[in-house]
Length: 472
Image 1 (cartoon, helix red, strand yellow):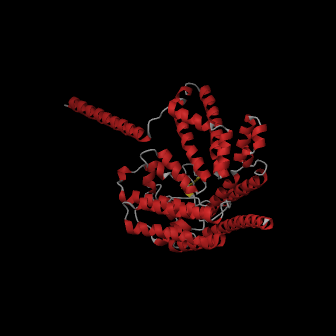
Image 2 (cartoon, one colour):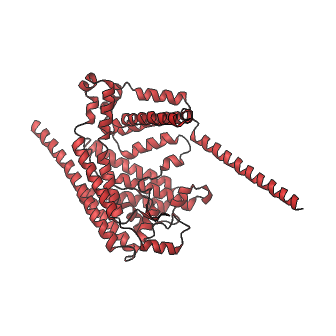
Image 3 (tube, one colour):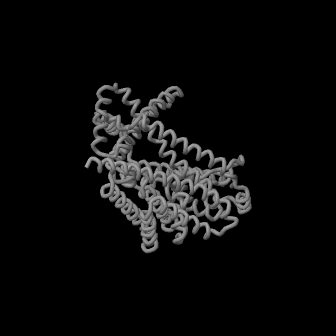
């Protein structure tokens, strides 16, 4: 039995390492393919149809190579939600797409964790499904904005991202499963992706640009080679740092009984910070390499600024939090709970995001009630900024420990070793320093803006009447 257990453990680690190697190999192949895609399938040489087909087929091939037949889940999830979009209409399809995509993702995550292997926390097929779920949801809401809502009800950002026509099946699968982002993202808007495929990156972002400037833009795209080299070098440096430093500061030491009993509290705080910081480079490795792949394909260029410097799509990683923007009541709690569901089935995720609700409410209360007193002088503001920065770093580390430990027992053991101090302190701050709910603040802002516009209108009317009287 002992021999079988050891062999199983070795095979588990080998399988995890094999999956990670597959992932890195696929990303490097995607990087090479991206250069080829930009040079030989440039929009000036190839039709959008060919670019869509090639991007989709390459993405599915890499997914099959990396995850085997589990990659079929990507097609099933995308196919189900596309059918919902076509059959249900634009009025309510965004809600159904969110529900179906998130439910399908959750079922896959629960099955992987509790049926197959709880301990296998590595590159797995549900990682790409998380990105696809983001794309499905954002696309559905952007279609709803463009085809079901009135223009005056949209924010400036929503007007840019709104989609005015239903995507074709090929466009939909190309957006979700293209080789540049199928394994690790980043998530981008549908309009940005279609503009990239068609070779007009600023079409929907700069409505005042004429067609001459657009033609000039197409002919003068800067080479992304140096930027790609920089990002690839950065990504592998992050991987090297993670592999060499992470073992020096294991997160599990924060809950070691000897460490807790024999280490002063200030040293525990320093070690907590170091152990959590050293877990980040692996994420930076994945995200930076994925960003380099998109740039190598020519995705990310957004024209030039007034000085002639190239611009990039600054929202390539920053997807608007749809839940927070559109949830009228308790958007902070709703956003954190939705984020926990999106990340997976490990209990540590829920402990992290539930703690994040309390931390965020306390931080908001301090900012609204305490910060104005420190804006009287530059010195006081610097003091406030330094203190709040340090407090934020500690709070983040404290919050995300369960995200790394994953299980309930170790996570609660860590919080008990800190006597739940940040939980208690943040609850007290949130209660003692109340902040008006978001929907009330929005109503007040709308009311004040209406009063200002009415006042300006009244002043303009009075001025016109006075001018007429003088003229008369």
